[in-house]
Figure 1 (cartoon, helix red, strand yellow):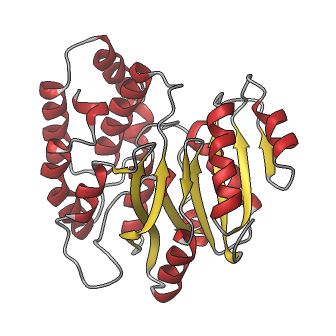
Figure 2 (cartoon, one colour):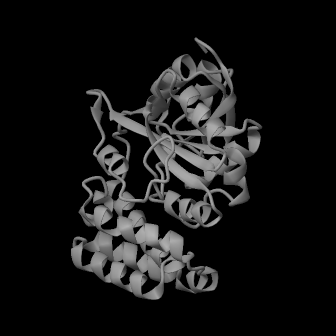
Length: 301
């Protein structure tokens, strides 16, 4: 790795059948990130991803799973790192030079902060991702600190305090992929942790062309419903559910997402744990911005 290596930070990358995109992202991560260690978790790819990592990036630690663990693959990577901070990346994202050092400095200076989410630039043009506006204009009360407060995060563009992540159990494997961060973020907030958006922490995203848009939306709808049913008060969960059913496209994808959510009703009822009033207040402030957000099309369109 070029430049100064920051011993405080390791990177966990998850991938599945995106060998070419991963090779591009790893080239940037190894050359520019300054992380002390990079771990790639291959979720059972069948396109030669694991072999390509071994040959082209021998210094990268590889975890080759025999199945697709989705977001839970990150848990495997975190378990291998002993750094205080872990930067997540997807196979189509990479951290800009100096970004991880800035994030680690923020976490050092603010021991009550568990997550730093960066500013996303969409490649190849370098334009701002629409989610940046939503993060920057957060309506949550700001007690002061390194950036606007948030109540969720984007795993491919965030640095987490490792111990806080581990204490909350990491990502829930039942959510697999698609908005899986919200449950973990809310549990972190319930435990007293803060999360912030720091625009000076920059991450690049070159959206992969290897994706199933219908499956992504279906899982996003399912996971959104599960989160509301698991953590929101009954009246608010019902209101948001009705709102989603009214505004989402009336098609097979939406129907599939709702059916999938209902299929988990038994375990959702068993594991339901409503957030405390202060966290619910924050979630309620975010309801309207989320409904009108241009960056949440996986639910609304």
